[in-house]
Amino acid sequence: MILHLSGVLTGDQVDTCRSRLTDTHWSDGRGSAGYLSAAVKSNAQLPDNHPLARELGEIIIRALDGNARFTAAALPLKMVPPLFNCYENDAHYGSHIDGAIRPVTGTPYRVRTDLSATVFLSDPETYQGGELVIEDSNGPSEIKLAAGDMILYPGTSIHHVKPVTSGKRLAAFFWIQSMVRSDHHRTMLFELDNAIQKIAMDSPDQSALTNLAGVYHNLLREWADT
Ligand code: NI
Image (tube, rainbow, N blue to C red):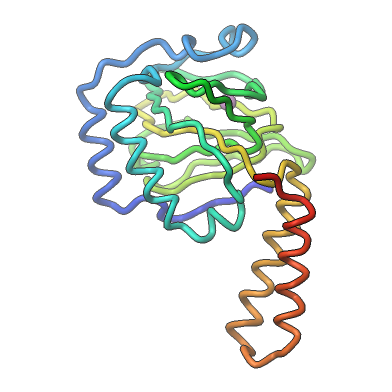
């Protein structure tokens, strides 16, 4: 499932990220890529132990903590702290797959990358190109979102970022290990949860709601690891 989450960050939070990233010292993005990905990667990135990445990453983590749609879709167990990148002057990232396991720098922990996420920080009209292209069984999806919006997609997808031919594309990106490893199972749980919420809104007196909620939780119990 590829899911667009609108307004994950408020306008003020986006402004804070953009202004704090304006004068920062970017590093070569190839530093965090495996050797196959490094060969096709050309962008700039904040090192993951950079204090600014930690500070701005906290804003995103806090925002996601309170985001019910994110929680329902991702069923998060662990997250890699958000990283930040900058594409300009034809920077791009060719077709690649994200590594299955990411170490969390400075800790003994590792995160299985069940889900990948990108939070767009630049207004789409301020740069040309820079679409995130995600390939799945339905073919490629081109993603270019409003500042503050997030795309959540399976870590199993091959994807690339088209060259940014003018302007500057700032984004945060990170990975999530879900309590439910299978994208197929997560998608069914998300759809069932949405259906239950809709019935609860439309006809809250339906006694079968309790049964449906029971099915949801029993499936979650079947499939989740904590
Ligand atoms: Ni990637």
